[in-house]
Length: 302
Image (cartoon, rainbow, N blue to C red; front, side, top):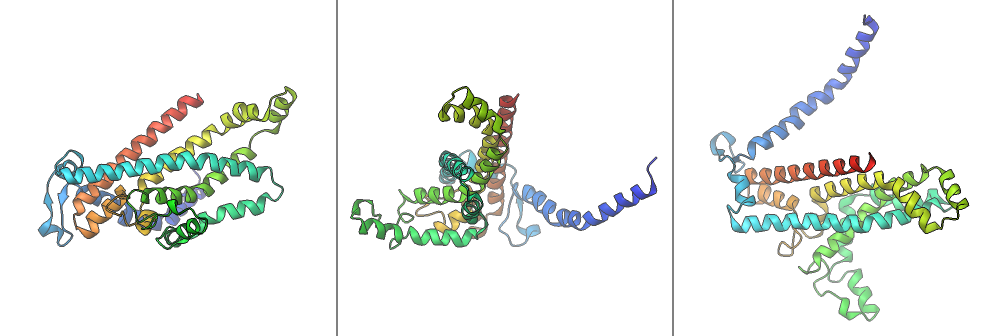
């Protein structure tokens, strides 16, 4: 039988959680449900009862299945930018972060190095991206450095972010830079958890450092690597602020991602139904990729 004290503790716990639950139900859950509802309507953001019009799946057809050829092309170009930013981020972040984690692990002053490498993660993202925009500008540090070194052929007259062919490179560089600290900390924790006796046994057997890395360290870090891949993919599909600060999706839409397209359709073109439909489409895609990655992870570990 449940004691009176246990009941009181349970009731007290729910009462402490009640403000957060009410806030979620009134703001969070309502916003989610309203966005689902809105994705099946056309609405200009004035008077919902007077201007909202039910259109069914037309919003999704408009940008997914050629309802508007131009908007379909723009959407898939934005989605392609999300995918390639995510791919290159994973491709560069994992080896760089792993190398830094090894460096920190094998250095006596690892605490100071961890602090230095972790600083970009706690700094203001918007402020840092404004700094990067200045570095990559037409008269920024990068162009001036190339000119000073006599590497004029590397100078981009409009700035790295001002040229449609090179703007995405600047975005990828900043995204990789921002993703390294958190990934390095995860790898550092993974390396610290590996049993030293495994390395001692490998050394006794005469295994080289390369073989030790390949057959002991890397397999034990595989679960963390899968988590990092899923996390970076999710970040790539949700990115907005760095693109908006660096390029605003330009020049000429060269760096538009789905996040900037959602913003432009909602707050510049006032097509809220279309914007929410885009957002939900990417959510479903991200959820599917995450579930697929977790399924692959479970099959690898079983």
